[in-house]
Image 1: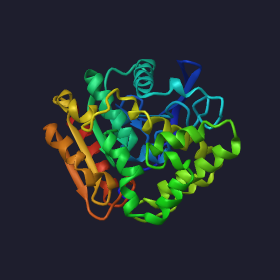
Image 2 (image 1 turned 90 degrees about the vertical axis):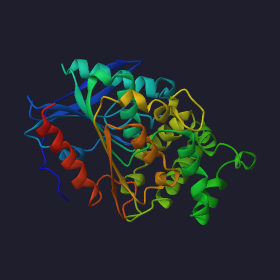
Image 3 (image 1 turned 45 degrees about the horizontal axis):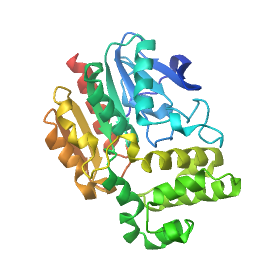
Image 4 (image 1 turned 30 degrees about the vertical axis):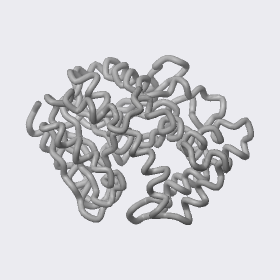
Length: 322
């Protein structure tokens, strides 16, 4: 697959970021290497050891962490009592800065996938002096049209699955904001209502996968499923907490703030977000970026073709010695 060899963490910890939250972090690779931080998807997916393999462990100091409420960070969003009001994009960006300072890092390469690309882009726009480069896969920008596409537009492509997805929502809400409606179900005091909603949400996420494999083993874990569905609907139902409800979205609007940051965008042709042309527009609004497109690949950084380009990008940035 073109990945670098596996490497084990040489350090790890739990960082108190306030609001009763502690985030789990780990570092691997070369302690004196170029710092790089990995932003996982979801929101709420948690990190994975496989993400280390996009970096040469001899060249990079690789930082992985679990964003608030997921993975080994505490408290878990899967617990009904966990306060989601302190889990927003602004909180996650502040956590990144706390972690960077905690690890004594001045600047780092930011690598993000899916939701992690949204977070990485917004972090770079608000803290450009902390970012050496951006490497982003399965790119999204967190705009309203992207959420609408995922929760309504693709219903025409997968009508049977979409009918089941809508059916769980109260009839009066089926033509409204489905994400917000699902989030209300996932916040219900009735555990059975919450569990049905989490299953229905992940069933829809699986159904609209644009390329094989169309099964997601982690969705079979009821704890993961609950935390993931609750976190995704919390973000998607609130404009990703980007503070802007217009159709362009904040990330695209503020693309000029990335002007001095080199970036690599790796996208599959079967990624549903391509239907909106937003990644193409982002690339053209950000001249320091390169857009690499992989045929017959969906929303999957690990797919053949995608992985090789992502590894090549981190190798190239390491060789540049920025």
